[in-house]
Amino acid sequence: MRTIEWEDNKLKLIDQTKLPDELTYVYCENYLEVIVAIRDMIVRGAPAIGVAAGFGMALAYLDDEDLDKAAEEIKAARPTAINLFWAVDRVLNSDNPLEEALKMYQEDIDTNMAIGKYGSEIIDDGDTVLTHCNAGALACVDYGTALGVFRAARDAGKNINVICDETRPRGQGASLSVWEMQQENIPVKLIPDVASGFLMSQGKIDKVVIGADRIAKGGVVNKIGSFMVAMAAKQHDVPFYVAAPLSTFDMEASIFDTIIEERDGDEVRYYGGARICPEGTEVINPAFDITPSEFITGIITENGIIDPI
Ligand code: MRU
Image (tube, rainbow, N blue to C red; front, side, top):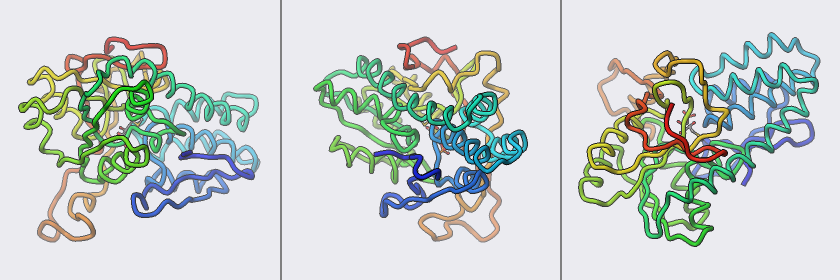
């Protein structure tokens, strides 16, 4: 399954807002349509956003647009995942934007396979592993980071049971991670976000593996709720791993300086199309949180498993 494809000089994306009910595609014919796809979360997940943005730059190049302007506009689509900025700058500074975007596309797949290979070493036969949000094939070009670890462990002959947090408010765990694991016939169960601490206290979760939107000095930024899972894991001595490519790292910055995206309050006010609070209720809706390094057992990269920075 390819989340992103380059077809007839167009960017083809799985429309993730329609999953799990419909597997449909959106075609972007210019860089402005790529910005809309990133902003509206038709494509989401840090590595996928990065590669889509790279192809957005390639479309701008093919259309003879001002590349510096396109770069600034694409970077403004979402603020938190570092892969977006990394990819745009990489393509902007290349001799051939289309070739560079195609290179990034292939690298993403190769990188995730390598993360899977290293990550499968931490999975024991029979493990039940919790994941949060969707760090799967849908968050990348293919294969996934955290879910790539589960795929690799299964392919190495290990029995693995996956538990997905629902991941309110947008429900990427329920709609995307569960769907992906079901497609692979990997045993999977869905839990409400509030249940993981209790299940850990009952000895029902052996490990946690999540993805990352940004890794810098002091910790990891990932989907809102990751930090609460990490705290519960520390309390119960459950190993807590982050799986992410090196393109997600910023070795210079402090993680605490990350701009955390604040999304529309209606994502919280409404559930399944129905309002769940009094009309006009004020909402706080940060899309990501920061897990400090002391909560993280290890970071699984394409070069091996490293300590948090
Ligand atoms: O808001 P989203 O769906 O783009 O958030 C995605 C996540 O937080 C993922 O866990 C992260 O990008 C890692 S994906 C390999």
